[in-house]
Image (cartoon, rainbow, N blue to C red; front, top):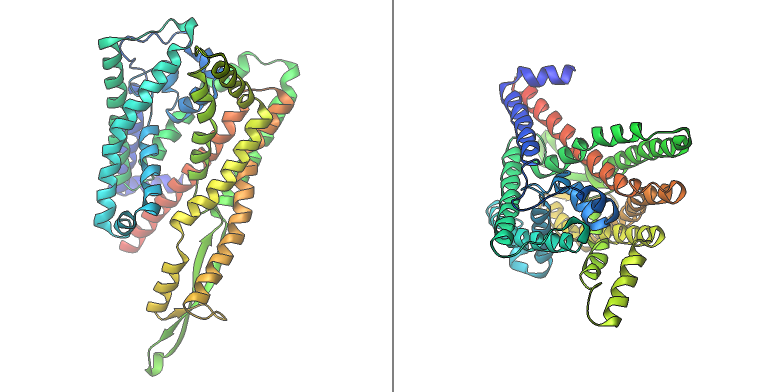
Length: 418
């Protein structure tokens, strides 16, 4: 409460907080504006039985369940951002652009441009996938399909714009805030549904879910906040102030945040998604392969093992993109800094990489274990909602930690100004 009082005493922070609330309200209003030509009744039961649509519904904040104009959420923008991060590893020109402020602004502009065709492509795929659910009776052609695609793409661009406006207020990442708001919007309904269907036999399932939630929150906080401080010394100039100044170089346990989770979720649902388009193929062999793939990936054990491996692998993969020991070593050498007991240059680079590999091994295993805990509990309870709930919990906790840090940073900066 004291922190909230301090925020409201500072006009800039108060206005920023009120704007964030306004953005969330606008997002939730847009979530109830339906796409033209779509009758979303009965779609909830389809989402529960389809992992891809269920995860997409989670990222869109439950808007896919209503099939609103923002049904795609910000997932096309996230996909575009990931693509350009990967391209930075392939093309040296993009890598150089990422090092400069002006270059990063150009990449952000390219990311926005790429979001538009990705939104149309993803919207088309979702529409065609839903059309395969014959019980819904949805079949769009001609102008109906065009209007639906334009509405969904415009909704994604609108959310991207809102997210960037929220980011400029420096109260957290706007895109992450929208995902967070969407996930939390479904919490009251989930609690009400659980209370309405509760019976004494569900006590074990509820106890396991509560324990899972607590373990996940504690685990995510540990992984997100954990870091190794490398001692660094800097040589000071001559005179009375000559000597050494000691500082530290923090290396995070999970340098990728929730990005490995987003990567893994996108990949783990891709094979069954593609296979569903071929379940009605004319060739018998193709139909059999597609049906086998759909059934196999719906197996809880297969899903958990694949999810664990992908989260573990993507944690290392993303770290190789953002962590560059050569650059850190070069910067330390230019600034007259060195790690005690380690020679500057190549030896420092190898030492930093060795330390980071050890940290990533622990962080990746811990994060992957937390990610599949809901699948493990689902195997004992048969509760289908736990598999998605674990991913939601990881995202929510990571976003809350980021918001708290940025707010504290803003308060600290204003305190020094005073």
